[in-house]
Length: 435
Image (cartoon, rainbow, N blue to C red; front, side, top):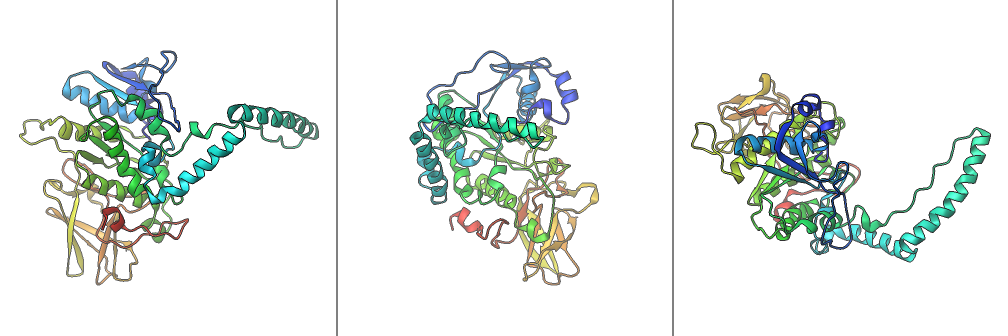
């Protein structure tokens, strides 16, 4: 989603044609992963490589989120802005951490052992030379089988692929070695990090409670800045809602909660909500402008200290943040952190995204209404409610926002273990909090 280009975004037709800012520049680094730290990175000036300007003839390959982020900074700060884009789709948090860090994480051991076994097989097979030799032999066999299939009018067999060095692909620390370490001596103002979807598949969520915070600490060490600002873009949703049990326990809820908790316990970070930007269930929502704009609000407020127009306070950038709850007369009253719920409202006065459960832990879609700076949540069939969840799903709904129309962060009042599908392992929030 960070690699998604402006050309592929929903508003490409107007954004590319209207782009005219020579002082907003971007560079897309070549996607290099290695199993050892690289000291340099070579960027060609040909084609789409090298530094480009945010003008119509050059901007289409710019990261869409980065473009909207950088454009807002340019308009507000009125200084040149450069975006270093090292985004790589389909990666996991462990790809962006230092190998020494990963070796200390218990849940990473199977992943590391699997990679080491692949590397051993590659090396024992003669490396690149061995791969080319095997590919040559396989191609000769394929050519014969292909000709037979065509003559008989049968389905043509798949063409053999040349084996690739596992050390040049997705691996523990691969992107850190190839894309972070080489640029560590550059002076950067901050980081905008949008990743997590691939830690939402299967049981890839298991090490995330350790690997995701490690991305922040490892990058700060690499750049020599213990306070390097880190903007965390919370993952959106995709696919379809299925059953209540499926939704309440989905891997994406685990990832979003870990992102939220990492933000709350890590100074110098911010969390940007995106679940409301998806309209069709695609894992790549087309609306990137809200993500970039909200990210810019965080950076302007927390990194640059920009005040709101005709205001003494810093620019508002946070939506309502859950603080606590109480049960009154069969209803759960939700309160929010001070300063985040001014002008609290339900979008178009429609309460969506609220779920409620009793002691049986069976959630149902709830009703809700705003009362001042709080929200009442209830359901007639849940006489004695004990838990409320909001925007909890693979593809979340949610209409709660503040006066700036910044969406409320997904939350839950309970600490019940989650059991994501495709496995039997439990996720427990206490482990994330170190309790």
